[in-house]
Image 1 (tube, rainbow, N blue to C red):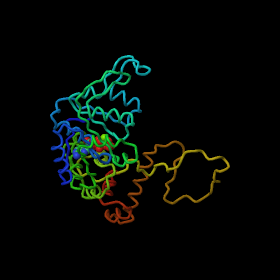
Image 2: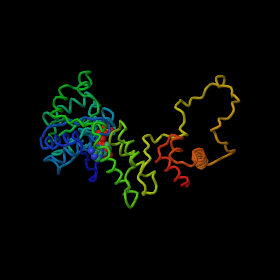
Image 3: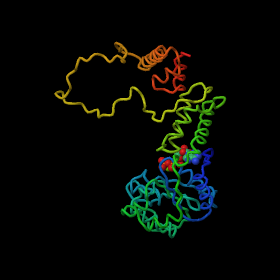
Image 4: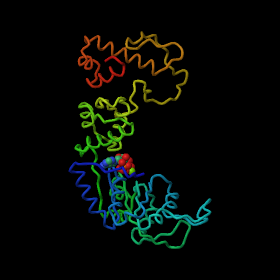
Amino acid sequence: MIKKQDQIIGDSPAFLDMMDQISRAAPLDRPMLVIGERGTGKELIAWRLHYLSNRWNKAFQKMNCAALAETLLESELFGYEPGAFTGARNRRAGRFEAADEGSLFLDEIGTMSMAAQEKLLRVIEYGEFERVGGTDTITVDVRVIGATNIDLPAAADAGEFRHDLLDRLAFDVITVPPLRERREDIMLLAEHFGMAMARELEWLVFPGFSKQATETMMDHHWPGNIRELKNVVERAIYRAWDGEQPVCDITFDPFESPFRPPAKTNRRLPATAAPAPTASPPDPATPCLPDGPFDLREEAASFERKLYEHALAENRFNQRAAAKHVGLTYDQFRHGLKKHDLL
Ligand SMILES: Nc1ncnc2c1ncn2[C@@H]1O[C@H](COP(=O)(O)OP(=O)(O)OP(=O)(O)O)[C@@H](O)[C@H]1O
Ligand SMILES: [Mg+2]
């Protein structure tokens, strides 16, 4: 769902070139394709194409083609007549009718069935279709904007997408650059999402990111692009509790934890295959395990605190040396000391 506050942010040459192309393409009454990796902002761009067109005050309908099974997708797009299938008691208009005079955004268009593609081709070409189970021809005026993260020409060559539909759809193609190809935008977006999150948490000011955090974000590959960046920033901010020090802890993987269960199936091994317990000496790094029920978080936090104290003692209370000793940055180490009231 696009909200008013969802501005498109960016300052890199690749981003500005794309914005330029969007502004020029928007007023043309032609279908458009938006191609890009996941999380690059394809939906925002489709909405902008609509908003900058002459249809801006008419409907902007959105349909994710991967969300519905083949027959359901057809009735969702084109509507149905009573009795078209079991349970179809009343006539229902589809998305094409709802988007009349406006735009229809078809997300993940590459997953559409051949039958739906055939109907889509006709509606793009002539503005005509029939509701599922109907014979009356309906005429609409809809601008179709398709999006996908797959290589459509390759899909067409493989016989999975109609070449003729591709030709109609691809009047022009807007290819969204991935975030790693527009590094200038990383911190701009991080600050934008950071400020919005700080506001949500009712912090008085947004203290920004530490140098280390900035470097960490600049060096990341961002496979999930802007959606990933938004999540990483929001997570870093809500985990940093005071809103006074620059945010320093960046976690890319929220599953990261010393307690993460190992990646293996939970299938029970047959009794005979169970390894015999070996009486190995306890690992010296393992703390005494509590007897009976215990609060896992409390135990873990208390062990972590002991490790910080130990690291400090081992390094004559030199925080920089201690941080290095335990594989943390100075900022991360200080953050930990603060968390455990050791500063
Ligand atoms: N340039 C941008 N400026 C600000 N926010 C952006 C920008 N691009 C994307 N976003 C935000 O990133 C998130 C992902 O964007 P969007 O849903 O449009 O991506 P997508 O390309 O459609 O991804 P997917 O292929 O996974 O569906 C959204 O929260 C969107 O608001
Ligand atoms: Mg999307």
